[in-house]
Image (cartoon, rainbow, N blue to C red; front, side, top):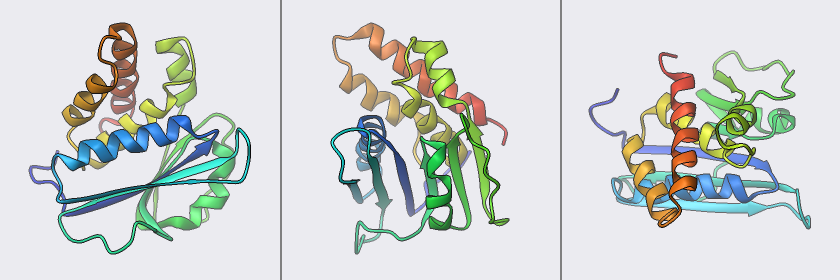
Length: 186
């Protein structure tokens, strides 16, 4: 585990439908505000009533962030495996992709990236009874794989989000922690 936080990290999260990915991105950005001088959270929606492409870019840095837009990022988190081909080119050389494994059959054309496939939906259903916490499983995997944000900061943000909703908080924390456990030692 890193003793010192990096001076800059960036991640693009993408999925379909939107709410879960945007929530995970906002949790990450809110946690980053406590440790970094500059943080951006930039959501983007495709033209669609429901179920369309959504992505958000999160950058946290101790240096000035000149733009919240990125053509490539160090880490890409993909909650819908069908988006892999569209986002593979957006991960920087030496970067990482964390992807929902359900339905994932593609082969990466890039040999210089780390690909982490997780059954986030299945894990969420097992822990919470629904797929709605799959975003937290993926976020947990990101936090553990990169060590760019202390997990305790995400815990704190979840506690703020679920004040008075103890059962929902317990399930959300469990989903997040299971995501972390799934990548421990990689």
